[in-house]
Length: 339
Ligand code: ADP
Ligand code: MG
Image (tube, rainbow, N blue to C red):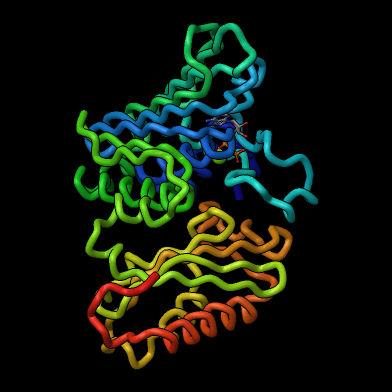
């Protein structure tokens, strides 16, 4: 047996990148979440060639402290939690302190950031893990992250990227999830110089769904709302005539985070039992708000799977809310529905 080696930070980051950064869309997700955590009200995402050539995320958030620029690109360094106890009261999208370090280890990353009370900003560049100097720079308040040469030093990963159209499709999906989870965010997505979405801040969830999915779908959504103890559930579900052959338009958000949950997906299917043909799936935009200490989001690096303390209670809440609602309206009508 060879002796045991302690891996250096660059290798560790590249291994972590394998889990967190599967494709360009993962970078868009992680960086938009960072902007939200920095309380940005506006995020612009600029993509060139499906992200293989450029991913640029610009926000107007609180920025990075000038002395923390190096920490921002270090692994297991985060401004969001301090100790293990904090893991049970997560109020931010991030907390692992892994994303930026991972991204820096598989691309060329340029960061520019300025805090509101600072006269100048700071910039830093990392090329495939080689860290440059932190330098002062003039820039607006907020943070700009620019990624080029993605997977330049991991040719196998680069080779596994799908067509640019497919990669952009994944990016657009991540963008939509974040836009739907945060209707008050002004969010812009551009691809190859063309504006794909320009979503102004809105107080109205339906406006946002409309801008992303069009009028035809929006006209056939049914509003639901319920409470059970400290848990709140609200959102829209689709008239049966909107059903799809896949579950791509089944959105579920937990405390502003897009998640996937088999049990709640099952409850949704059960509620529509008898209303849809076999193999058809309802459309949904569901929002759950529950106390952060009753859910563990630290199950998977991308945090899309979570563990609920009482998943049965949520199952029943969703199922009974939908069933009661469906009984109160004429689901066989093809007309627009009263909201
Ligand atoms: P995490 O989000 O889990 O803390 P990241 O690797 O994504 O880890 O980010 C590391 C740190 O860099 C964050 O904790 C935050 O302090 C800082 N940071 C990253 N992106 C931004 C941003 N857009 N605005 C302000 N700070 C940021
Ligand atoms: Mg993060």
